[in-house]
Length: 115
Image 1: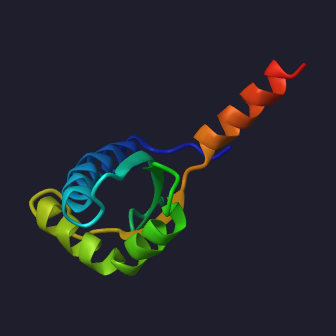
Image 2 (image 1 turned 135 degrees about the vertical axis):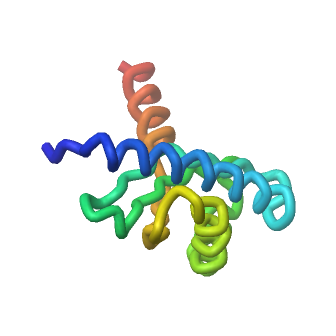
C-alpha cells in the first residue's frame, strides 16, 4: 500500500475544498437539480496530477453529466488555479472518475438482506 505524505494530504484537502466550491457553482448554473460531491482526491507524489472522485445524484443522466464535466476539465482547472494562485505555484492536472462506492454499498446491502 502506498502511503501519502503530509504534503499530499494537505494539497488533496485544499483541492477538495476549492473544487467543491467550483462544483457547487457549476451545479447551480449548468446542472440544475444535480448534486455533485467530491468524495475524495488523490494527489501524485510530485503534486502534478490529482485524481478527483465524484459522486453524482440523482442517477438520471449521470454519464452525460460526467462526460460534460470531463469536457469542461480545462475550464475547471482554470477556475481552480485562480483559487489556488496564492497557495500553489502550479495547479495539478485533474483526472475525474465516478465514485461508485455508494452503489457498491447498496448492492452489498441488498445481498445481505436477501440472505
